[in-house]
Amino acid sequence: MAPTKRVILADGSRLLREMLHRVLDKASRLEVVQELPSSDELGSAIKRFDPEWVILSRPFNPHAHAWVHSCMADHPAVRFIFLSADQNYIKMKSQVWCEEDLPDLSLQEFIHILERDLQHI
Image (cartoon, rainbow, N blue to C red; front, side):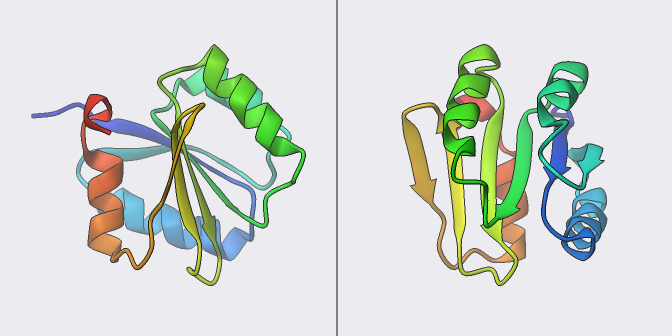
């Protein structure tokens, strides 16, 4: 069996984080290791839990893009997904230089992206 992927949910509304947490808990290969109401403690949470994924909701602090690049340079295995509460915007950042828009994803497709092996992204 493939290893479990660790996920940090950060920022956004408590309701959105709770819904995502419930959905991800049902996936066999995903574990939510931290849930943060803001991105203020995200750096220390990444160091503590060494996640494969960080899911942030939009709108994202415009100054945070530089922080994300710096974080990815320090922790190259971490991947970020930015999503909007209205589900009109999902962007995956898998490398400092690689961003991918993920339009019209079903929930099953979203889970599959999170579960797949990172070297294949």
